[in-house]
Image 1 (tube, rainbow, N blue to C red):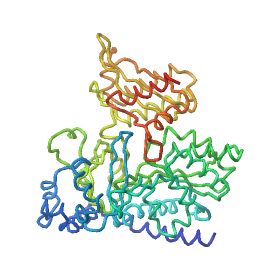
Image 2 (spheres, rainbow, N blue to C red; image 1 turned 45 degrees about the vertical axis):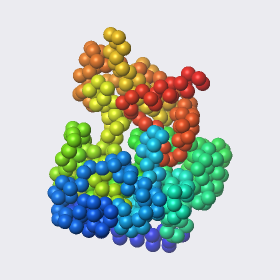
Image 3 (cartoon, rainbow, N blue to C red; image 1 turned 90 degrees about the vertical axis):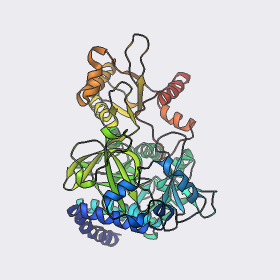
Image 4 (cartoon, rainbow, N blue to C red; image 1 turned 135 degrees about the vertical axis):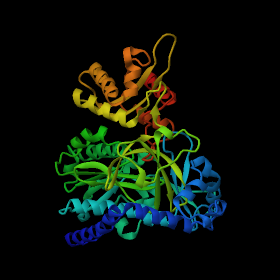
Length: 505
């Protein structure tokens, strides 16, 4: 296995030259991809609708094609789900990534072309390993197995030749043989759709395997880890998997989970690597050991545009190309891809932390915020406030959500939080005060509304009993890696539902 490890390390490092190339010529690479995408799709139904053959540059592309949401692309995607081809993209589309994005009942079916699998998702996975091996020359991860917490996979009954599942399941189902050989557990377990049964079987199937790296959403990774420790009677994961050296995570902010992982994996050499991989594409990888910002991957068959959030609600907002973005401004991401998503607003917001090379930080969602009183609190604000409150009161958060408390009579409005703690704060009132004060420090609009409690009063915070969020997700049929607790909402739907569970328990 040592020879195999050395060989694979060498292969992964060769890719670094290509990564350095797009870091050096980012705008040229992006322009080339836009031309390739337009030329490839000119004879599709979409390409004919917008006369792609006559588009000669970025300006014409933006003028011709309106910004798209899932709802505007849905009629085209529904044709593809029924087996029709050459609609949004010329190559055969038979795979769809089922995405909820939030815990809302509406499912999205994102087309996944062969090109998107090979040139985007698989390439992103290989690049992630290449960057890791480049940063850790002594890496031995290929001497053992990768434990992947995948989602469920189902056959799409609308067409005998079409399949859907969450993204991780689509990827697992299509992995090349060499990658499948390095993964655990068996596909029959990895693709189970009953998450409670899956966790149990995964724990039993992997606890005696030489696991060197883990990839998955933090929440479910912790659930699995705790079950493994229960079954083995061990104190931490290093006692179960002594060669464990890498954890790859994404989808949610990792900061609230860091302390739990340190307890589960008490190893100073453990490497945590963040990726930005969504159903719509693989966008970013943490490329520096000491910096959590994500390198924007520019040669994956994706053309990027960025919409300043202050113009998000305008009717025909002007988007910026990569060469026009500025540091530390909040942008909505817009993508055109080699799976046929055209000028698609994916719903995520980012800030650029570096322009040479282009590195980003995920700041939240275009729809996950609280702005009932003009306070414009985004997830980035909330995470900073919670992290500080936890650090100063020795607390560890498991899950949380928040929403507005609307004006009632002469009372000011406010924010209502439900927090499930892994470890409760030693001074609860101080925790709430630090949360509140930090929000005031990082968000001037929130601070202005908090002035003398005129518009916003001190936050109301509920401590949720253990497994409250788990019960809520289960109640809604939303257990699984692709379903996440909505951190912030501009309405009371989620909080009121969860409060009912708390009151009835």
